[in-house]
Image (cartoon, rainbow, N blue to C red; front, side, top):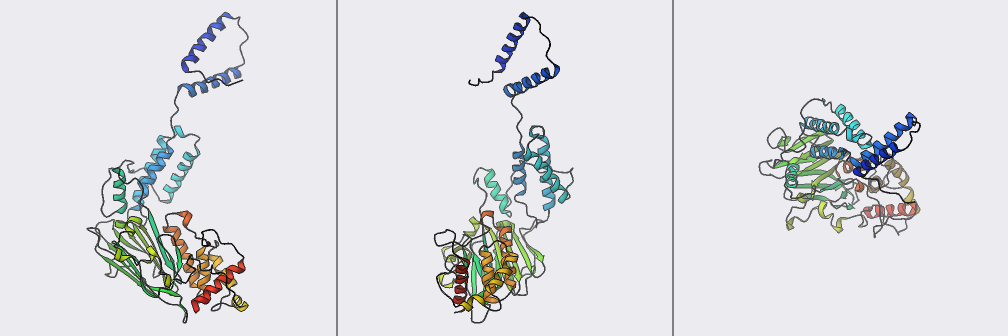
Length: 441
């Protein structure tokens, strides 16, 4: 027996009137129990609400979207962050209150309310105070990259948020390019990582172990090029045992006003500094681990690719020249297979680490056996320097902090056709030892 569609409000009214007339013609029966009457009224009320009234819409998604748009451009390293973040939180809280009736029973809504309360406690935000406007008048701040990209979206131009690229260099040295290609290179001497219209980064690499082609970075030079009224040219230079928290001219910022367009933030004295260039939406991390330096950069794609043809030698853009690579061309430091080694090579590596002890030490810091783990093992076997374990671990932390796409944080070894490489642990061990032999030849 098929189901019939629910009657319209007019039809329901007409049916009720007809039923009333029929009731008057019939002899009176005993009244139904009170509970049954209440149940009948409840069912009729629900049917009436479903057919004759459009329920209010829960707008928690709109509240959350507005909050994200108000906070996505904020930088915790810049003065005034807490004030602006609290304004956005209060606006978020007000939005959830206005839609509370329509969102009763909505798990997303209740989760948002709890999250707002936690964030306000963490940031010491008062419940009373100014709020951010969810429809602000978009102004063009030439010294805030996020401001003028937001202005383009507001005017109906570019509707997509800016795409960011990541580049990193660490260890012996291992390079992760803007295209997420992973390479192990020699590149002894001075080499340009980035050289575009806005930023230049050059590294200098020196041999790590006598008789080996393996090198590591002992000097980094970064030039933030002059940019209209935002900043004069600023040069930063770090060398081993001298990781300053200032530019070479002694200043720690660039640009006028309270919200500096360029700022150096020292996270760990002599060991870790960050540079935030608001005017080009770029962040740079520089660390010293042991005797050598590491570098990580996030930069908008449209700016990173703004360079002339003569500036094509950029390791972050095109990778290391083939003649300078000491991996297998796939970025795998443990994937050169198909060679046999004397049994003693598997037992004793250079200098003082075996493959087993290197694996154990690296696994303590990096439980995921990705390319960063393999780079750690490779560096321990080729140098014997335990600081390279910390370098690989910090490099992965920098990826997690700066790389815009979480699904690409980890890079796993693959065969030439891009599929995961199979084979036994012995094969991988043989491959790694073969590569180490190549380094020392």
